[in-house]
Image (cartoon, rainbow over all chains, first blue to last red; front, top):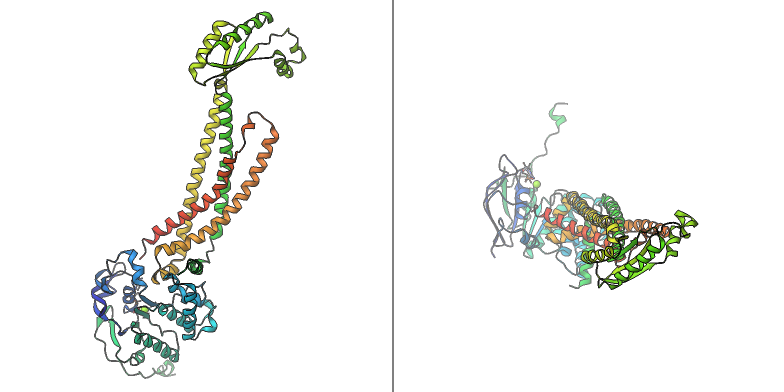
Length: 241
Length: 299
Ligand SMILES: Nc1ncnc2c1ncn2[C@@H]1O[C@H](COP(=O)(O)OP(=O)(O)O)[C@@H](O)[C@H]1O
Ligand SMILES: [Mg+2]
């Protein structure tokens, strides 16, 4: 299947008022790497929520894995969702479960045998460098550690498509680089990756990566990646003090 | 995938909702409701037993009184009536109550003089009928009053009937109260389940996004509610057992003839034991229905 996702004139409106997403049309090809960029509030999270079936559009057509996702009946949603891994912007780890149990959740939901789950979780913990913290509750983990657990949970079931909402938002540049490397290696294994980000210089790091750019709810041609901006002069200097 | 591993997995997954603070309220509500229901059920079943015993006592039984001041005429009439009774096809058995027994029964009221034949004591004949139909009673009554104008026929059903009907009503009332209790319990559980769903909305959304089905999520709630309801049912059962035991001992000490029928048979006890299990099952079912209905409104 060449096209894994197809949006046609998709609109999304929360309650009354302006459309948050307006006439969004695009196609994602299987096995490619996509960046979704745009200013804060442009609608990145909203678009990704449509993509991982957390939200139905107000209008338009969404095809997912070759099927109409808009009219998909409720009882077929779990089957589709199991093919998609999600890294939520706010992680959404389950607070009373340990890091290991959080990571294991997709496999448990899918009904995998416990012995296989244990092995997969061990591998995953080693991969994100959190073997020591396997039993820790999310609240006792740092922001970056929580993010890595969230990523491990998203990828452990080997989804066909990985949707990540600003997954490098809470980590230092070195960790951001490592996480991107992680996504890239999944991509090389055949996973389609869709990643919302603010990090311009990460985009350069993925050769052959595509860019979708949102501007106030509309998809526009992305402007070229700007050069690193000069650090702004201190307000103290500007106010002449 | 083996069954064992699936169950183990379900347990670990189920801990996702394990921080419910208001859970103990549910346990207490179940405990109190079950306590009240068990007491009502015990009272209702015992009453039904008493009503049944009374029915068996009354059914087809008559007492014939010969009210005649003069002892010789009274005895003659009694003999005549007895002969007539024994000749009736409706009558299974007719037994004169010995005058000595009557005197003994009256003694507490009349003193020892009752034995002296001076006092006009009626002659009594206990009659068992073949059937307990009203027609038989009417036929026997007609035959008896024809044999002696002094004879009066009392059907036990006539004077114990109101008591029996009262007991029947009480038993039905208990059944009605139990149904209302079950309804109220189901409603409380549904509210608790819905509140729990609301409190865990975020977690449930995540589990849904990871591909969990509504049934899987509902199972998490069922497990929680079964646990809380089980604790509540245990507490309620123990409280009720103690209360019923105390009351039963006091009823036993009364040695009253009417209250003597207030006992619980083996079948009644089995029903009482089944009630707590029924409560837990009802709670789980109510939680499941509430959660599934609520989730149908999510995406
Ligand atoms: N659940 C919601 N209800 C109402 N408005 C929302 C909701 N989610 C997002 N919005 C609005 O939609 C717009 C886009 O938000 P979002 O998709 O989160 O943008 P981004 O992820 O690019 O920052 C914002 O104006 C935001 O306030
Ligand atoms: Mg966002």
